[in-house]
Image (cartoon, rainbow, N blue to C red; front, side, top):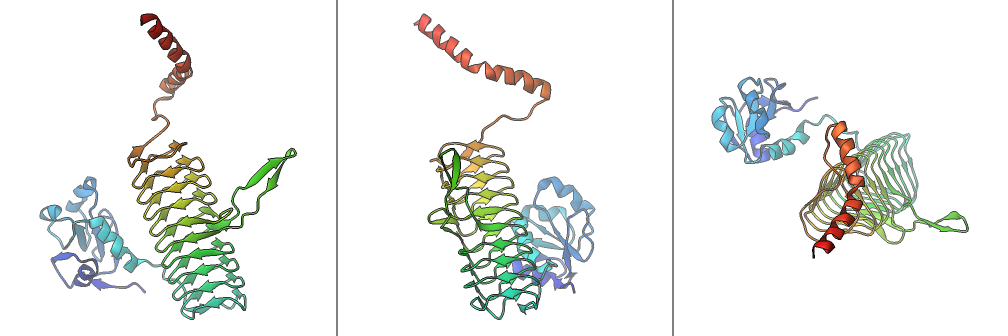
Length: 339
């Protein structure tokens, strides 16, 4: 059943100023282009302001400087996108299952599961696991022995949490993620590779979100650490003993090699790569597909590679790039002749 809220209730929940019909009932969220009379929309990007003239939304979240161009019901906020984010959970149809343990779940007798937790079908909970109040463990998830799952954690379907992992309160982990798998540790000798046992763990802080099919390897010695408020997109690889600071956001396809430390409040765009044993300063921005091969000690925006261009032009430039070393030597000889 869909929940219904009045505009006055929604204004109170997101601390907005209300302009219009306080009793207007809202039962969903949608874009300006597609919203119906029972739905709430928002304007965060000026490029979509043109849709204010034609939207059928029951109300719109607007910034103070945009209110004058719209005649309908309005929730006024300095940051409309944040208002939308805060209200979105009210209309999320994925509410989860009931409290308790599904009959098909396998729970070791030494595990501790709070009575308010919801454990879905075919979940496996191994020995010594502790699951706190309000946790939601969806169908098919496996939690390895001696792991700790905090309060109100949500593990989506088919998540794998390996042994000795700690997950902080209110963290969300999406389907297919593997937390605490072995790191890529090998020693080469006698013409072959010798496996290094990965005997550390993974510690994930509170209020973290981890996307589908992202892998976070356990530490070789000590722990891999994901600190409070971090946001990880889908298909990210985080190697053993990496540390990611508070509130850093990392987009899809990023790979971070072992023992690299990413600072607080960093933003890393898609498909960027990091060599191992680096330190990245707080507040750093890394652009998409950048390859970071040395530490960054000063916050700023960093890129590598080249921008896209027409293939014909790119092929010419590749040839010139191959000639750079020879050109540099020739310039150096000319400078010696000059001076």
